[in-house]
Amino acid sequence: MAESIKILTGNFDVPGIEQLDVYRKNGGYAGLEKALKQMSPDEIVEEVKKSGVRGRGGAGFPMGMKWGFLAKPEGVPRYLVCNGDESEPGTFKDHYLMMKSPHLLIEGMIISSFALGANTSFIYVRGELMYVINILEKAIAEAKAAGLLGKNILGTGYDLELVVQPGGGAYICGEETALLESLEGKRGNPRNKPPFPAVKGLYQCPTVVNNVESISTTPWIVLNGGEEYAKVGIGRSTGTKLISASGHVKNPGVYEIELGLPVEEFIYSDQYLGGIRDGHGLKAVVAGGSSVPILPKDLILKTAAGEPRLMSYESLSDGGFASGTMLGSGGFIAMDETTCIVRNTWNFSRFYRHESCGQCSPCREGTGWMEKVLYRIEHGKGNERDIDLLVDVAKKIEGNTICPLGDAAAWPVASAIRHFRDEFEWHVKNPEAATKKGAVYQPELSLA
Image 1: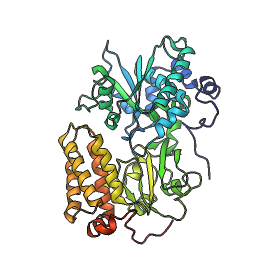
Image 2: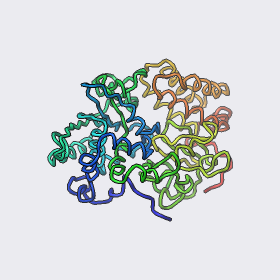
Image 3: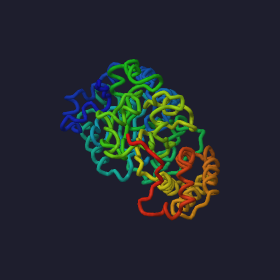
Image 4: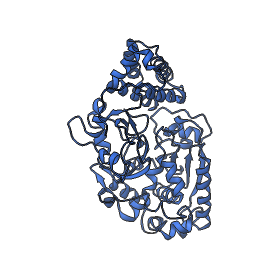
């Protein structure tokens, strides 16, 4: 089996790669040298557009296109904000990247800030990750001492201050406008859009918000060219993707894969997850973090048309929510037949009820309602009307909130009932059996 290209993680196993001298000995900051000394900001933006790289935080919006929307009024500062508030259950690849190779992100921040005309940029990191914040701040100090940050970077006349900001301790702060509110010292409530951050963002100035993984691709793109990046991957899913893999697999961890890798190969190959733990079979997968629709084994391995399902934006979403899901933030959670789907869905629902900012009525009331009904079903006090009630509440939340948290809360519930309705019905019809410790509805499953 051919080794896939490693755009982000190729040097992660090098001892001391988090240190500036080791990072530079392994090619670090060569992309910055080229960007500042040989390229104009517009040329860098053009290369990012050619690469086709899409936002790796969950939405998958083309990064170059997002950069192109940035307003450039005279006499008004522009900002780049890196979203490191990684709070999606099942996702942990961004803080792994910052921990293992902080200078990769810093180099990407400097290149991207130069391309966007920003002289002050921010890395917003989840507040609980203080050890990561300490690593970043040490690396920033090293870069400053070496003339790679601050005034007159590399003698080019370009100035940049880079600030690491601890997050507000809320999942909602991962939404870009709530993040900006938090960065300004306010409660992290999402803003109405328009205006979009590209026009009025941080301090009401033009702002680009990008994910850690997204920004970390720019050194490679600058060095090798956008067209070379676009040759990696498949179709409009170009490049590589970091995947946070967890659950009932033999080899959980963070993997950098080429987009287009078959899901089946990712799960069962020894190069990746190594299959489901011994003696058990795959039951379901959450492919992109807790907010995306869950899929049963037959639909995660193959599309409804019988084609192999691929790890790409297009293939995972093939069939819409009737039979597909989303790549999302890359939080890949595999579940075997010992998993109770009702209990899992209730657990996800508890999270979204707790993390709702309460600004929008459908989300504030709906997440609480879904959590209570799921609790009722899981604890043997539900009835058959509750199942359709959950579907109805999810429909009323979806698409009716300022930010996507409402959708994120609704999709797991709706998809779990869509694909595992028999399991919900079993809980309702067999409350005594369903509430026994360790009880799981198990129709006939073939182990794989």
